[in-house]
Amino acid sequence: MKKLLCKCICIVILQFVLVAAGLSNTLVLGEQGEVFAETDRYQVRFEHGVLVHFHNKLTQETYTLPLRGPSNTQRGLSIQYEKGRYGRDEPLNDSWEIASKRLSALSVEIAYHSDYRTHKTVRLRIAIDPETQDLVIHQTGTSAFGGLVGVMWGCGYLNSQQVEVILPAHGGEIIDAATETNERNFEYPGKWGAQLAILQGGDGGFFVQSTDTTFRFKELKYVPSGEHFGISFRTDNPAPFRDKSEITSVEWRLNAYRGNWQVPALYYRNWMEATFQPMQPPAWVKELELVIYLNMNIDILPIVAEHVNPSTTLIYLLGWRKLNPDGSEILPDHTPKPEFGDFLEAAHNYGFRVMPFANFVSCSPTHPLYPEFEKFHLRHPIRGHKLGYRWDDPSYPYSTAYINPASSTWRKYVVGQLKNVYETYPIDGFHLDINTLFRNDPNGLVDGLTFPEGNILIHQELREAMPGLVFGGEGVHEGTFFNTNLAQRGIYNNKQPHPISSFLFSPWTIPYGFHVPNPDGEPELYQNFQEAYTVWGILPTIRIRAPWILRDPNMVRTHGFLKSVRMGQTWEQTWNIDIAMDMDIVGDVNADGVVNVLDLVLVANAFGEKLPDLNGDGIVNILDLVIVANAFSR
Image (tube, rainbow, N blue to C red; front, top):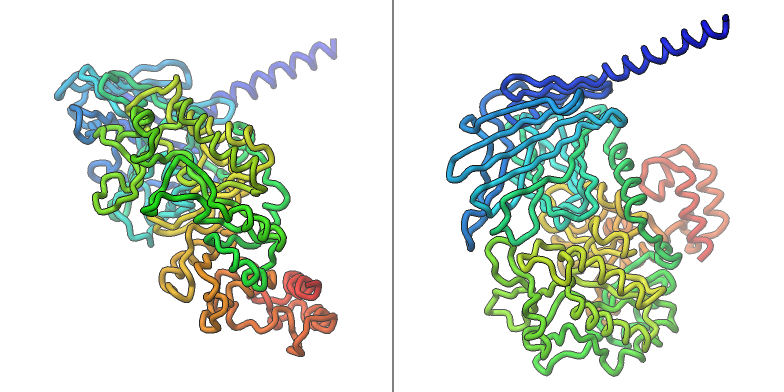
């Protein structure tokens, strides 16, 4: 009897706990479509289809301002009315009819309908996931006229002074009150590399993410408006749009967190790893200290070998393919010049790794096969014109067409070209130029595949055809990181660099510099690269165009950079040429011209003091001792 009584009490307590847990998740629907959502983590309110209030219960921070005037975020439909025109957004406003209903205890739907120009409806579903307490956003849209491009929703009245927007976009970017910027658009997966946005407050923040694995085209829009800003999220239909009268969005998820931006970033990175199963880079890639851009000139190798550690240096090789007599490309052909084999043999004798430049999406319009591949020529999703490298530039005689890699005929030809090189020459990798090109091609499905599916497939086919080879790319995003172990990082369009992209991708895809300017020849331009690359932790990179650069003693910043790399300095010091130039012998604390045990003793005895601070962190510690030890062992 006593056991039975205890069991009944436990059941009652358990029921109370479950009811209390259920009551902690609340979703209230108002008469005019207002939605109030509350969990143990946040309080959120939607009005007129816009998230206008977000309170983080974990930190007691509110990230929005009181409503004053119209929202500064777009939400609704994006419609292309006729062929040849840009898409036009149809934002929700007071003229749209509203109908709302409850779908379940933790799910509601608000329908917005307009007869302006054509009958169109947007349905916004808002739900709370009881397991994760994520706020889940899902949309559908219809348009009787057709031409339906996308559907969007947004957050408005976000406090510009208290909230920073952190995006894995343009290599990693932060937008805060100090950022001088206007309206910004970030397209996924090109400019916006992972479908994650972090809104960081003081002690925590909230994040928006999608876990779509089909690489649907999306767009994030940032709209500043004085003391507040808006941010919206759009999902697009696959092109062509003209016959599209319906759309279903991806699922968007929001939640609050306590801590810094790495909390949601780590959560998302773990999801990426489990979902896409990226390959780990081989040991030699992890050990790289330097990437150096070289033209195929065998005479430069002994000079370069004097200034770097060849065994930890990767040569990004240019100019190794045969060209037309006028100097134009013969893409997609990748036929080596006769001296290619001799260059590889000499480079490997010094201990260098060599990664030739290649391209799997470009085709010269003069190539004999272009007429066959022209039907797969990539086009603009709305305007319909052909796309390529400087394709519409009449002043440039070497333009190339971008071919949709969903074509099995195209993939077979390109993979065969690169495989011939792999089987004939002992290369260490291929740099795949323009490999992050994922576009919404109005040619539609090709051989049953979208453009992104074709791009991913050609990466996989290259890996299968050339086992053991390392592939690098021109940039990296969510669609390429699991097939590449190296990636260039450019600095274009980045207003304020942030390390989030490196945090997300660098465990598998190591970033290096994108055609870095010479620090002596273009010091101001180099400074721009230096500032971003220091934030991102980019693998030191330099281009040496000719042997004289290494012979000329006046190229002091170039020599300082290479010396810093050679002496094993941190990447902060490597990119800071001024520090590198001031060094005589790294680790020579007593300035006797040699690094030895005496220098180790001096550093060890100075632990906790300000000098000799070799790594510039303001205190003598184990890191300084490591620098001396590394220099002592060379």
